[in-house]
Length: 96
Image (cartoon, rainbow, N blue to C red):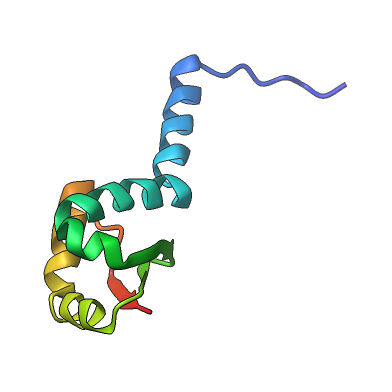
């Protein structure tokens, strides 16, 4: 029979919130909400999907002009998104 290791509930909760906070799906959900507030309804209407992978935010757009306009302001978008998240989660944005 394996020896059971007693664990403090504080340690378990701390680990749970650490894992939850660093979950990609959770961060995508948070970024999607920030994206809607940050870029406004015009660009949200042209946003098809948002995905996060390896500190890169992938944004699929259905309008070339909207994509180009956001591409030109990508550094400012990265700065504002990371500031809203409270940590550096995004290093770059790729528009598709």
